[in-house]
Length: 211
Image (cartoon, rainbow, N blue to C red):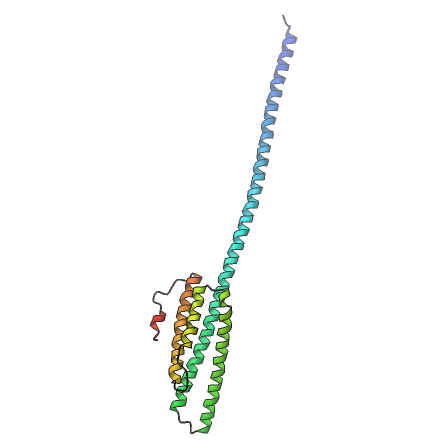
């Protein structure tokens, strides 16, 4: 029969074994927790990297889209500005032609002054046409075909306006102005659609301009 000392030794060894087993199990849990944490950290880093890449791509795409919209907007502004200058020149030419017909040109000083003004107006007209042609030449690079078609229709309509010695200059200029006004309205409508700008609630249309 074991004595008291042997029983105490067995009890102590048993407690030590239980402690060691508990320690090993807990240690295993701690190691597993650290490994899980490291995996989670690695996954988070990868997700963050992928997220940044996606954000960069989206940002680049948005920049491309915004840059395209800016180019289109600037081109429409340039075209409409050139058309506006051309309309001003035509209105001025029409007014000067009316003056030439209605005023007494017997006054040499007045006649020379009117002649100088007409020459200056012709220069403005040529400059306006040149700017419109330059803008129209590069417009197809930026604006869509259906918007550029408005300029093509203008060229066709102007070419169809009668010319010659027997043609009334004032009537001719008025027809050019009407063709230009129709083009302006068409181009504005196309620009609004292209740039995503809401249409006017009560817009004029090319049909509102007399032929």
